[in-house]
Length: 524
Image (cartoon, rainbow, N blue to C red; front, side):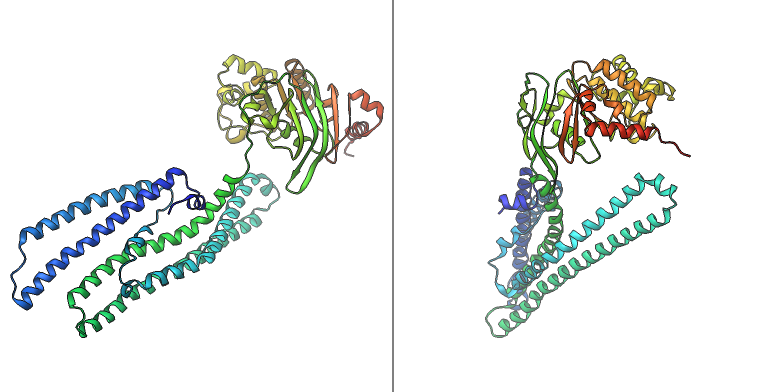
């Protein structure tokens, strides 16, 4: 009943499947125990009817009391187990279903249960509509969430451009759309669930009509009809719950499908052994695409250990993509990237990144003290080591101006710091890690000329002997590089030392000349 298809369909863990089985078992037992109580009532009613109509003596009290006591004890124990199994285990993960009850009841006469398959057929017929409504509701909720996040992240730009009213109007519309989607979805599901419940309960009417006819024809007595009426009223209670749970499962399957998409996405895997012969980074005919758009094509170059290799080129040429591929944050479509002679696709990313210090253009800081944000580069580093690398990254001056120095909380993603200060914190973090391979993606983009010069001097001293891959737009940032790789349109246009490329009068030379011209621009 609960095979692999069931587990995959509702994105359940192995424990979740076991919980569903346990919950279903105790639900069936409880309902069977409760329905067995009808036999006690039948026995009593038969005795009373015999006394009233035939003058028979009343049933002895002791057996009746014994049966009633046994029923109460069994009912309490099974209900307790059911509560633990469903609310304590199953409901936490899958909103457990009680469909197993149907198998236990399928042999009862269809004078009373004909409405059940019709009701469930109607409900299952609405499955696609329920799924579409749930999907629309999910999309509307995502749009609201994205709208709120966008407004919060861009509040300064919105206010500076006097666009508060327009953004508020748009956000209100998204909230209204979500409300409408939720109403339509719940109304549609409610209509089908209640319609199915009404149809199912028509079985009571047909049972009464058929039972009356059979009594009049002398085929059954009143007590048998009474027994059937007692049974079916108890039967419909769990079926009503099943209808609601099945409807919830239809809706929850949309979320389960989204979760399953994540589970099925290919993950970066590899061995936990990484023993490189050196720390050269080698690109061999590497190509990479975002979706269907190729951003790198047949890229080959080497960033040698002990040298600073600079990647330059216009925006969109693939510089940052190369850095991320070198750290195996993404995997290449074709070609090979080697670090120290080892194909990085064979190494687990977490193991590989132990040898990397990375500073990207988009700095990520935590809502913690300055000291702890820098110490993230190497857990266990002493306060003196943190301060030394902070000074080397030119952080000491602004840190000393903070109210509590290194113990000052910097806010979510460093909101209490300027852009340049945040970037210097991330550089200090990378220096503290002291990894043999360093990736700097626009690491000095937010610094003024004076601070940029100090940072470059610090990097020159502290990164000696490491493999350094620098990505920068400013040509003065790469003047001291040992090697320059010029990318254009996702391909290597030229490579060599800065002097060689300047002498070649090619793309690099033109970029340098253009930046010199821009530096002379003045507002008149």
